[in-house]
Image 1 (cartoon, rainbow, N blue to C red):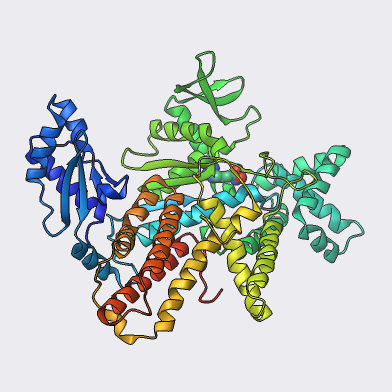
Image 2: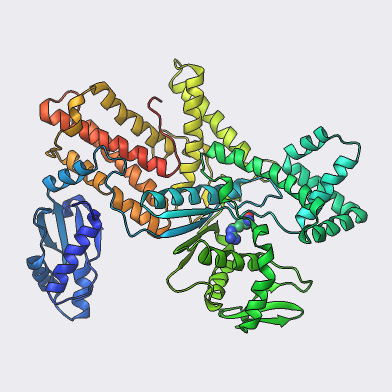
Length: 580
Ligand code: ARG
C-alpha cells in the first residue's frame, strides 16, 4: 500500500477519473485542503479541464466524482465552489498508512526510481578561510545530499574547491619568504593558523615589493608547469587550509570527506582540450586575442550575444573553462543523471551559460538534468551584507563558536541543575542547529537576516523549538515504559489525532518536494507543522492518563512523531537530544 505517497495515490486516482470522464491527460492538481472544513485534500484540476473543453465545470466535477474510486481511502468526497473536489481521508486508511511506517528506519517512505546525483557544494576558495558566504552552500548542499540519499538515490558529493590560480603563486611565495627569513617553522605554523591574516600579509607584500610580485608570478608559472618544489609548497598550503575547512565541517556535522574533493586543479590538464574542442566545433572563436563563445541565447543590453570567455588573451584559462571540464567529467566519468550546483545566486548567469554551452558542445545530453541551486546572501540585522563590527568578513568558525556560547547561556538559564558538561552538549546541538535551521528554513533564493535572538528562540519555526518537540515526544514514551506499544493498533477518533496522523502520513511528500525543488525549507515547514499539530494533540488528548487501547494508540502517535522529527532534523543535519 505504501508504494506510493499520499499525493501520488490521490493524483493517480483523480487523474484516472478525469480520463474516464473524457479528460485524458488533464492534470488532477492535488493540494492539501486550504481550510479544515474542505477536508484533507482538494483536487482542483476540474476547472482547467472544463475550460479547455468548454464544459460546465460543476457538471464535469460531478462526472469525475462518479468515476472517482477512492474506496478504502476517502470517507467523504464533496464538490465545492466552481468545481473543486474536496476529499476527506478515511481515518482507518490513515491509521493503516502510519502503522506501516511505525518502527521502520525508512519510515516506509516509498522510493522513486533511483538516480545518480552529483551535488557540487561547499566548494570554498582555499586561498582564504571559510567565511559566512560558504555556510549556505555547505549546509544546503549537505541537506539535499542527505534527503536524496534517504530517498534511495546515489549521491556523489563534489567539493569543487578553489585550489588553483594566481593567488596560490602569491601564497606559496610568501610561505617561502617566511621560512627563509628569520622565521622558524613554528613561526610559519603560527602565521598559517590565521589564513585571513596570512592572505592579507601576502597581498601587502605583493603590493609593496615588485621583486616579491615577480617571484609570485614566477611561482604561478612553475606551479602550472608542474615544478615539484613549488607543487610541494602549494600542497602544504592547501593541507593547512583544508584543515581549517574540516574543522568547520566537523562543528557543522557536515559529512564531506577527502574523497569528495575534486577541486579546480584536478581539471587543469583537461582545459586545453576543452578549448580545442570548442574551436573545432566552431563554438569558440578568437576575439581580441581571447577564445570566446558567443551564445545567442544570452543577449546584452545592446542586443548582442554575450561573450563567454574560455581562454584569456594571455593564454590563461578561467573559472568557466574549468566548469566545462568538470561538467564533462561528471557526465562521462561519474555518469550523473542529475547535477546540482549549490552556489551563490549571483553566479546565475555563469551557470546558465555553462549549461547552454555544455549542451551545445554535446558534453551533456537531454537526459541529464543540470540545475543551479542558487541562494541569496546572509544579511546583518541592519539589512546589509553580514559583516563583523569592524566591517570584515565573518569567519565561519568564529560564528559557530559564538552560537554555542549563546546557546550555553540559554540552556543554563533553563536547566541550571544540569551538570556543566551536559549543558555544553545541549548547547552544541542547539547552537549549531539554530544557525543551520535559520538558514535552511528560508526559501534559499531569498536573502535573509541573520538574527541570534530569533534563531535561538524556543518558540516559532526554529531549531530549538523542534529539538524540544522531539525531546518532549520521546520523553512521553520513556515515561510510559510500556512494552505493549510496539504493535498496538492506531485508532483515530479525535480530530486532533486525525490531524496529527495526516501530517505524519505526509512525510514522504515533503521529502519528494525537497528533492524535486531542491528546497530544504519545505522539510523545515513540514517539521514545524508537525510539531505544532503534535502539540495540539498533546494538549487535547491525554496520553499517559488514558487507558487501554486508546493509550497504546496515542503512544504510537508519540512514537512516530518522535521518529519523524528525529529523522527529519537528521536529514537537515541537525542533532536531537533525549534531554534538554
Ligand atoms: N569556489 C567557488 C566560490 O567560492 C564556488 C565553486 C562552485 N562550483 C562550481 N562548479 N563552480 O565562489
